[in-house]
Image (cartoon, rainbow, N blue to C red; front, side, top):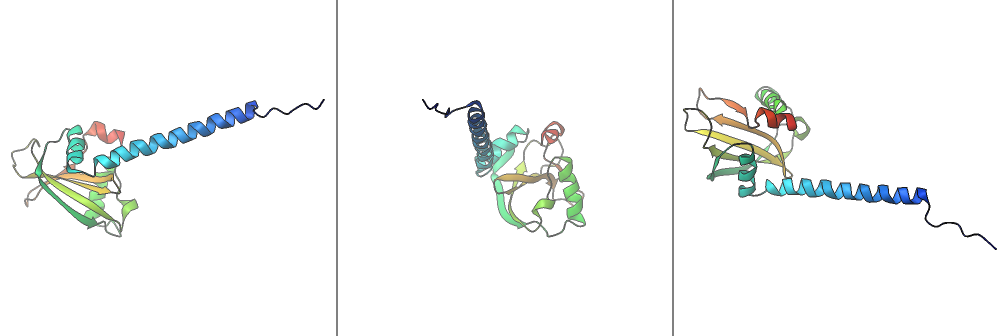
Length: 153
């Protein structure tokens, strides 16, 4: 009598388990990334995200526009990117690319100045930069990420 070879051995079972785990991991990643990307695609989603950082924006003040990140980060842009690096972002991989900038009147910045704004930069549904600033001559600019959130980025 001829002995049949096992169709399903331990190696094949392990391989199957690894393939299923890899597929689940990929699906989880795209689901998480997709949710985050979708969150930043709408005004309400951006407001919710910024609220999770502790910021209250005037949603009716939203100004959105397309901006192109310079081909080289020099001068002011180099300094701006240093601030972004401190909060977990980096514009250098996006040089020459077009992104969306959304600017809002910030309602809860701890200062005497009533005209404090928050700007975020989104590329392909991903937050790539952000700042809080004033438009006055003697104004200021800081990052949007609280220190504990910047460490998570």
